[in-house]
Length: 159
Image 1 (cartoon, one colour):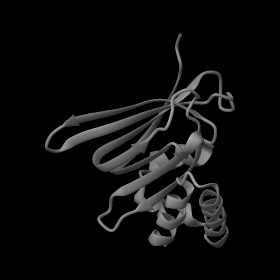
Image 2 (image 1 turned 135 degrees about the horizontal axis):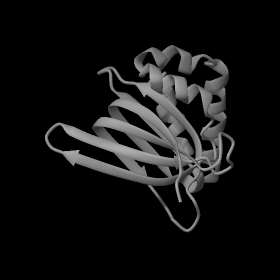
Image 3 (image 1 turned 30 degrees about the horizontal axis):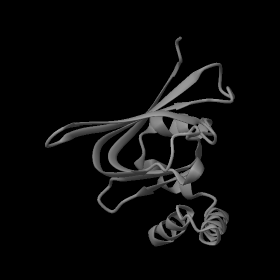
Image 4 (image 1 turned 45 degrees about the horizontal axis):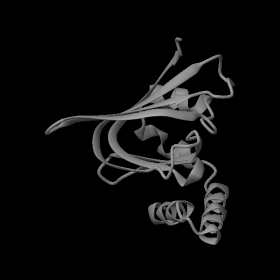
């Protein structure tokens, strides 16, 4: 299953439209064949995270900020701030994703001329118990974050 996810995920990141479209097709097939995929992995995710994540559809949320903190050799954190642009969950709602004890991460941003909007994501639980969260955004922007834990915090944006 992990190699299947890696295959379509790599294709989704391609600049070649034919490869990118094939990645979408394979992603759709994966979702069709594995409708309970998230249910099968959620026992490895924090309960509070799962509770919030299952209630919110992050598609089209704006990614406002992403920050990396490090205090070697052990403590590291990534904070991704997202905004409910369409106000589906309330006026000016902000959702922070906080990843702790980062093993590795990659980020690819082609341009900042347009907002970066969350498109789709998938989790993988690695053999060593770490969580890999892959997020594909508009304009082929992507984030792959491998961490020990993840949480979501929500609050209303203040002017």
